[in-house]
Length: 331
Image (cartoon, rainbow, N blue to C red):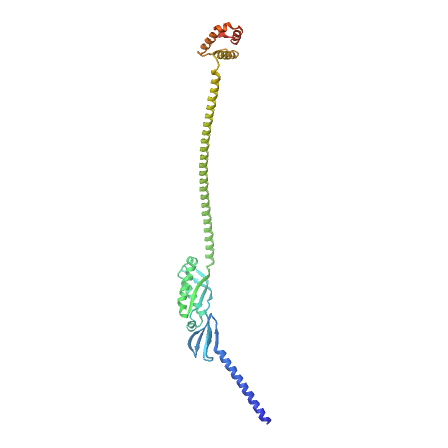
């Protein structure tokens, strides 16, 4: 009885182990059959060596042990090409290194058409670079870097297109000419900068001279305008002053005329005698009298012989004789 019980227990344990093993195998097969592909990835599926195509992204179901998968990254990548020595059209050796930017556009073709894309791309790029550089001179190579990048990209893309790969850009990173050429370039650059400095200095001097001349011209014009305005103002001032002086003189003569018009002939004769008295007191020995002086003497004579004056007292006559001390001598 105990032997039968032990035998049944052993068979049960064996069945349980077999069931667990089967479950593990099934889970392993299911896990191997399900693949998760990321958004930027694709898987190329081969079944028994035959291409089935690219799958993804998301969950991809395959048959384990029958299908073989190859993952392809669709993101843009770059390939660094080390220094390559090339000879230009004018026989100048130069060292050039550049970068190649590419991305896979057809995952199946990138697996089927080329075995080692990196090695193939480097070899193709170096060969193409030497062909392109050999057709241009050193100066053009240094000056037209963008054009060379475009030519390299076009030629590489023509070849890699059948591989399912797109060359998006080619960038030359460094062009290193020989030492003597570098020295000549530095010397040429220095000379060119010195020439530009001299040209700029000459242009500055010319502009300064022009500005100074323009400033002198404007200053002369302003000075002439100022002198003109000053002369006009002075003339206006002189005119107004002359007018005012004339008006003042006219008014003063009017006042004098008004004052003199009320004086009689006798008073004027006395004034004339005062003037003769002042002349007689001067140190001069010769006197010149105008012809009109005789009319003054006749007036004085008539004044002395007038009856009214004779009837008056003798004091005024004596006073008149005192005012003319040299009358006799003058006559």
